[in-house]
Image (cartoon, rainbow, N blue to C red; front, side, top):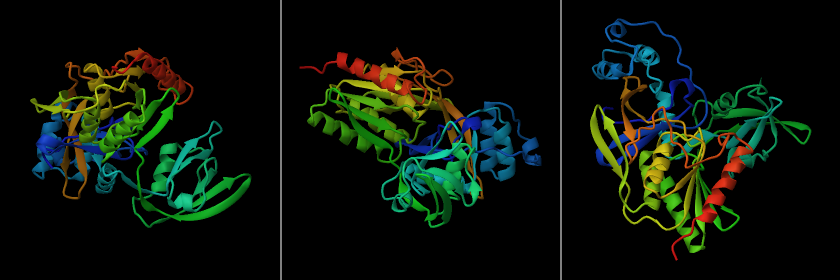
Length: 397
């Protein structure tokens, strides 16, 4: 699997499935994290192969990858090496987790179509039901309390753990039994998990003829969806676009570059290095450079989303509003083991058009909204500020 590059999430906070990103000219893969669920790396006993490979710093990634490629390190030793490498971005995936990653790249996931949140009292509540999903067909409704999953009480659990249990072992057709409370009454239902399409792009209308485009993650086809949304907005006489990248932890780099091409007329989007060798990513010609644009970001804006926001900022195409972004600019390369498991190891970093390296720094907005990464209140404030900025931007007459 050499030549495939990835932007991973930090090991300590990596969420369930990461997203891999294709990089056109090299046939390479760049990746960033997404989705829900927490993975802990268990302690494993050291092997003889491990003792021959130094651990403890990022520079050891070359030695670890070489040992894996030469068959000198097995899955347990590789996982232990990743956990001890000293590189916060390195990750280890089982074959099943990596299969889920590939599925997520195509904009699909296995589940029942439920989004959940944890209330202040610790209850797990249904926040959203995907149309046409098993949950929707069973008439699960927003606001229902999820009391149990397969007979195990859900109250008090982290949302990530609940999501992982709802999705199960990534097996379409498997059954899951839910205990629900609706309008004071209880009911038990059994749902059959299915392969469902993710809904990565949400298009809306704000006051003042502003089009809002929310991108959850850069899955397959997102660039085309954003392009279609912008064209429709222009036809409808929209006075501006609010590009919401809050909470977007990344995805396919090709899709992020395609989105940049929607708003740029060619030119540099980012550079990145792999073992010291420089590469570049460019927008396609012919993008809309006239429609006023504001990008909204927060501390959950990561990797490919930072790449997009930073490119639009550096190129003078968008005003960036919100709070400082996460700061993930490291590039990983996955190495596959015989059992299909994958070790992700850092091989370089990417930089924005002005030469900035966002790793550990993030992107500073042009207009900072205090507390902009908060889930409520501040979220509305960021949108309000973005609309104010858009009202002051006028398309050319």
